[in-house]
Length: 155
Image 1 (cartoon, rainbow, N blue to C red):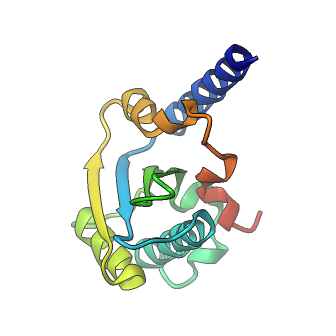
Image 2: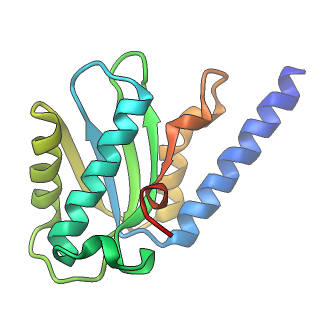
C-alpha cells in the first residue's frame, strides 16, 4: 500500500515540475516569515505579495489586467511546523523595472516585518522545480502547500 502512495506522490510531483516548466518562469523567489505561521496565513501573505508586486509593476489598475499581463507562477510551502517558507517559480510581467530583487524584498518586508527573501533568475526551470517540489514525496505533504498565483485573480 505504501508503494502505491509513493508512486502517486511521485506522479503528482512530476506533474507540478512539468507545469512549472511550461509556465516559463523568469524568477525563483523564496519567501520566509521568520516566525511561526500556518499554511493558510502563508497563502494569504503570498496573495498580498503578488498583488503588491503587480501594483508596482503594472500600475494602479493592475487588478483589471488579464492573467497573461500580470505576475503568474506557483509556490510550494515547506517546513510548515518549523521554519515555514515558500519557494516560488514566478513569471513577472514583461515590464521595465530596474531591480526586481530589491522590490521583492521591499514588498515582502512590508508584509512580514522580519521576513526575508531570496531572488534568483531562472536558467533551468525544471531543475529549480525539482528542488521546489522535494517535500511532495513525503507522507506529511498536504495539497494546500501548493499555491497557484492564479487563484488570487478574477477570471
